[in-house]
Length: 196
Image (cartoon, rainbow, N blue to C red; front, side):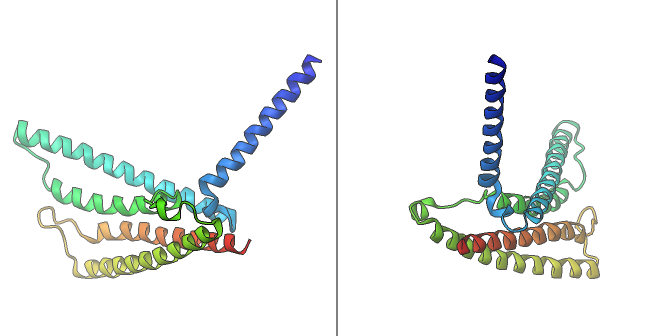
């Protein structure tokens, strides 16, 4: 009898865990995984990897800044071009974080207007928001591409180190392109939710 009770308890706990996982997955990334869940999962994983790379880049910049400041004030020998490296790395890191932030619904939302809205109206508003955001992200991606091609053709470099500027443009362009993909997929998810 005790064995049966233990088995049923374990099974009910396992069932609750599975149900919790399902609910967690829906609340965590429902908007991203609805149409073609595989595409949403791939995009979310890719956005996470890109954000992780951006975090590593910023951590490296932070370490370089600490070493440079220490060298400047203690040894009178700062890292040459530390300001230029910081500018380029921070520009790349910002675009590395955008897709993951949007995929995880991390953007700031003013809830006092939409808090009591009907879910259908919220879905419509979210779809509109993602469509507009996708258009803006497309414009940013296009201008980054134009800038990258121009910097590559001109051979423009930083003042002190002489580092080519296109080296920062192309990674930022990849992050902006990923943001466009996330926005489009989320817009499709919200439009699909409207039909249900």
